[in-house]
Length: 388
Image (cartoon, rainbow, N blue to C red):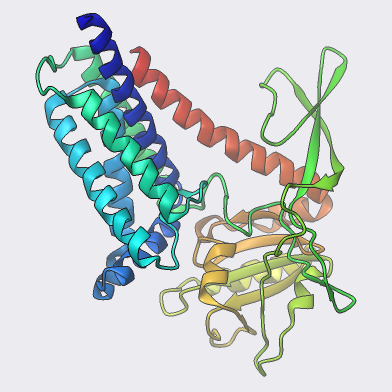
């Protein structure tokens, strides 16, 4: 019976570790989105004066969740980690009680943009985590000490998490779960009528040993298969036909020019924080090279940028389109193909290659490569924590 109870405690501890680690990594992947979530909580708690610290607080909280999850999985400093985990879980539960009572128009942000929960779902999820804490940590004895291998595993994963955090801060999310993710169409109007193209579904054809196989973006084969081509499915994803995400832009006279987004190959340079943007020379070079490569270029910002023809849009729309201030987004006939951060805008050679290649192939290749990179980081970390 004692061994059975110990096994149950370990199982609950692992579940807690997995939830905290994966939730933290999803939020670390999107620091800007985490900052927006924290900003919503600060407004809800009437602490709006702390808004300038939203992004830093979001990253710090996500980092804490990730490392707590890693410590639970590695079984290091068990008593201290048990106390910290319990306090965090209780704090989240108290906060979500207030969300259920006051029903603010905001998302809990528990798993970043990857999973959206209602306030009730969030509350129930936290109650389950509280129950797991009770089973995993009580009675508060027989925690045991640290082993050298587990400490090594924890610090190895900590290093990986810190590198991943730095990469996320200077880049854009490896996986995009926003309403303007690659593969989504911005073509909201056609012949004056609202249409609902939603997110198209693609099949990726790979070849191995002379045989071709068809795969979806969520179920790609291993590296022993060779990419062949992309095929567009006839249907669309479940939920298409509902409200389509739209991106509004207006010119200097206040006239809406949304049609510019859906005509041919478009390269958008988006700036959501004009006062904080200091890469005008790079932007002008990029826009010139993009036009020479055959793209129609648009600069979209929250407010006009001096000496540059600027289309304006809503702050939330711009920051959702591209998380990088001054990042680039490539659209083909209104469909989002790929994105780049401000620090790694494509040069003339990359732009020429992008203009000459099949947009669908670029969409699948870039999206799948970034998805595999994120999954690889997470799986490597979990393997080190659970096996080493």
